[in-house]
Image (cartoon, rainbow, N blue to C red; front, side, top):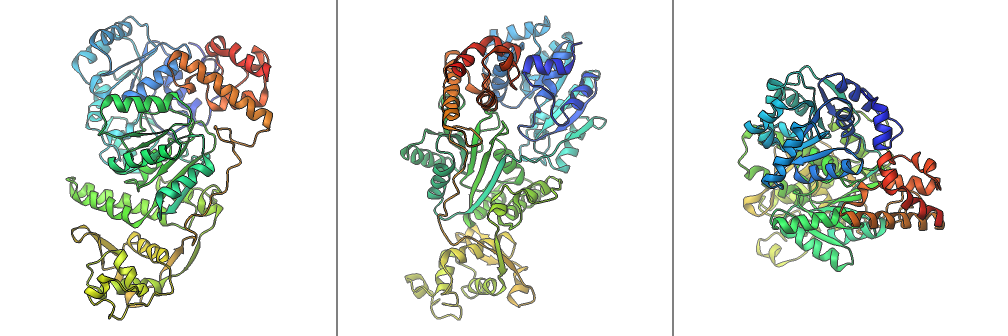
Length: 602
């Protein structure tokens, strides 16, 4: 058998394994089962791709999305690896040809959907082929406690029953302790060795902004930090996706919508443009992203609250997969909390599932409101302790002021009580600030005791107080009364003065300009000289030209990290270029001279 490190260097062009990769690879090569929990961008794929090239036979990779299969197969073929996929995008003859190649031992890896793997015909094919290993990607999909449960994953337990001698890997980047236990139980991996890596993505800077004028806030963020970069903007509804994409396009960005309401051809065209071009922004519902392997997404922005910490971690994890600096930005408001809780309660899930989803949502709301280091809170959710604040989130970079908010909370709660618990925040703040409106006059609220008691406090501060009170469970939103705020039992001690509260004070400025990043546009992670910046863009142009000629994404030619190392090292010959991380033997033969010519001419 070839040595794993030799495969890593010759085929993939990497000098050595990272983290626990070497242990996992050796374990699988020896025939052991494994549960691998590793962050997005941490190198999970290499944990089964390297053993697939070492062990005899074909590796079968179970993947949930067509786009993910296609992306990984494209990348592997660029490396000279014999890889293919079997899914519904192929016609009968194409699928039959790939199955024949499997039977004849002419493939190293085959990606399949879980539905196909459990079909009698395909199982029969596997019985007669030499299988090197099974890799179950996105394994959290097997758990009903996870954020992305897929019933077809439950049938994958058949692999243990039918092929007990073939090693199995279950891999995921998103699983709390309960989900991990579920993966092991449902996939018969109780005896598998667990490899748990850190969930930390230190290259991602986390920022949460109180939602005021969300579009203008988003525009300020993109223009100041990512004017030429690829990014994803997530919205809750299809209508908001369409409106936001249209608005960004009008602002001069190459932005495209993506949601389940678009026909398949349009969705595929927009996704293809995002993958194969540079600097494209996709505005999407959560229907987009899971199957995207694009490494140089420089930002993920949420215009609405995700449904859980797992969803937030997975969606933000689509930024900076190449390890270069990236941003996770979110605008968050009281309306988001109300909308997500409304969707949760109106769903048809069991009460047990709803109770779990409530806890997950409450954890995410707590993350949004925390004055602490966001990374510490996020990692703590996944049972990981970060000893010191990260220094790379908004709360670390711009420490949050907290204050004794007991009196303000009492005023806010009293306004709800004295107006009959039948009104939303807009009217309640008018009452607190003593604003005479048609509504305050109609209901006589300009005569009650709390009218005007908060006149000296600006409206955004009262919005922040109400948002924090809802987040902390002192208030609930009644959707049958058009978003009326109502007191919970927990509010009693605060109103009576038996409990004190500390609140965070949001920045007074509505549009506080983000500090401009020192990273120039186009993905370079640190300030470059004018000469190096010119070379950087020339190398990217060369990559894009080669990619377009083949109809493949630019990053399957070389990642940004590889181009950046070329800029720094400036190799002028094949020997120097071969020492650049990511330049394997096949890519050297295919593209080496093209990139060397650009460097020599600079």
